[in-house]
Image 1: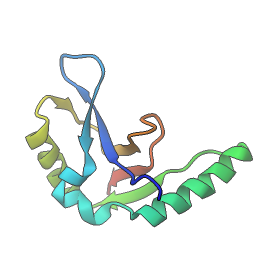
Image 2 (image 1 turned 135 degrees about the horizontal axis):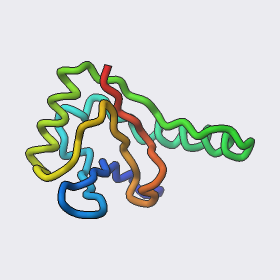
Image 3 (image 1 turned 45 degrees about the horizontal axis):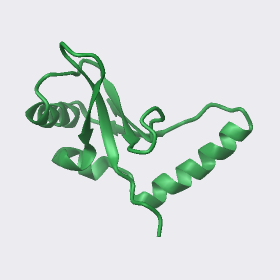
Length: 108
């Protein structure tokens, strides 16, 4: 059986170097927007083929309305009050590869 995806949100922190990781499963508003494991696996398979053909990697994109995006930001701030969050989008990564986004959350 394959290892379950552990989806994480990497955040830069104020006053320190490096990143802080927040488990995406701990953000209630985000749950309805997270892809299921079979969708993640299919996208990774497609993206592997794109990379082999030297094409650009594309993560799964989820678009959140402004109010939902703001709610997600509030929920993250409750967990990690010292993070830097001024962008209109953020990435979600897997614990086995923190440099490659699996999902991109975008404010619309």
